[in-house]
Length: 181
Image (cartoon, rainbow, N blue to C red; front, top):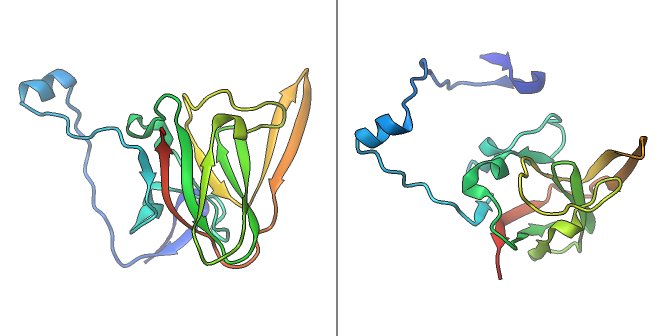
């Protein structure tokens, strides 16, 4: 069967999920029923193993760049004084753009068969005019090769383009996480 999904992306499928009407229960009803929360906050945001792309999305299916709203979930909120870390591997030298809401940071990827460890702080993330003050309230995280950021300063729109066209194969990622050391 063929269809059109989010952002009119065409797809074919041979498996389907059947769903039903959602029923909601209040916190009090759950407590009265003896339900206990087991999900805890995690420093590990994404391992990039298995079907990780189900929690990420794109509007451009021809590109490897992906976005996620996982940071908006309390499970993956940044702890106080945390740094954002990930490992990336690209055979060719490139510039990776890591975006967060209206801010982004450029990361020079050296190009080799070994994993490169990257650590970022809020001040590494800039928009067209200022640096990100802190991680709080972050909603969207992006990984890509190029991004144009826009902001208004004194009524004038400013734009800055980060990154460049990606050279070579799609990069590999692992262990996107908060570090508190």
